[in-house]
Length: 520
Image 1 (tube, helix red, strand yellow):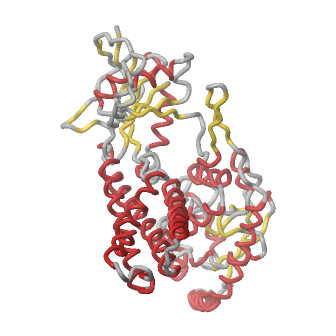
Image 2: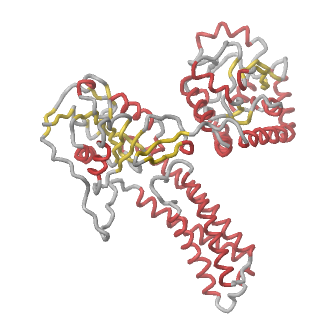
Image 3: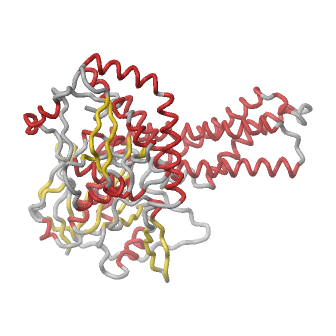
């Protein structure tokens, strides 16, 4: 006999957000699990329960083909000499350039995994595979032209291939944006996403639920929890989704409309249990995912090393030194020097507006903690009245953050021009001086005041890298974030930074600054 903690509670067809595990229902005995499905060489692979990716993939195929065809047609019109060798049969040439070449793009994209549902909609792997496919297309076209001794214009071929690659990347970015909008608006419905059943102890499942629901754009929607540590441990606990125990997993997934089983932490304590679970799911169309007890670790740092049938997760050390760091420092210095020269007229205009608004110094310099605990004075445009420090004591109880920085949305110490400078982040531009001196970086954790004493606990780890003008916390909410969330993002950056990651944060900073998110 098996028991279930409770069935999903509905109200007008919609699930309630909080459930109490305090009642039990008797369920009929579950049939014994099988050891997989019979296979043959001619058997078709089963269809996945999750269906959103099929129309999404079909749309990507059509858009990629159209992008490549448009690029070829544009190159032909721009460089008519590309038809050399095909003047006798222009119809064949246009068929080759606008039909066969785009078809070749789609085929190579497919074989490079650019349509694999595991990489669609999240992370950089989708774009990396598109870039690899672009290199493969270039190599294939070059080889065929050389093997057949075809006289083609290098300018037209290069234009067609490069334009096709850029258009395909643009198509993927726009398609991902639309997919994320659909996922955010779908909420608990799980449209265009994966409906997950979490399996493990209740604390582990709740932690995984908190992590995966932090980003709705990821499309991971937990719909139920199946606990393995006994229903007594969950009695009376508030949970965001229904909790079950002692149920057949495949039957439970079908009952709640799931398509993925996520094994959390130590759920598979019994040897061979996870393997038998995988056997049971064969032919069902349900995905199986294993959630290791690793958080805030970027994908490139994690590798699977199978040893005698045992898959080991190998976690590489963070890249905190070496050629990549030297390149980052060089990029910082060059960009800071050029930025100061280009922005000199902007600096003068801001300086004049500050002096007109409030008599006092143009710049504000404050001690901050930098790389490896060394203190330095950060440069900023002054945005507060000259007596701001004296007035701080009367405003301490109105602090709207829970961290080491004082923040108020309507700080009376900020003069009007200063409020605009803060909202547009123009007050941070003088920190290019700190970057040029090597005290800061363009991207890194935010520099914290030096008058709060020594940093304790995990916060000290953020001192392993230089503080930055912008950072992961700024493109993720800025002042709207809690202190714990800001520290988590800073530590994630320290452990997983790369030059590509820095460039992506700089790009995201532009949108955040224009939208004025969390700036006050």
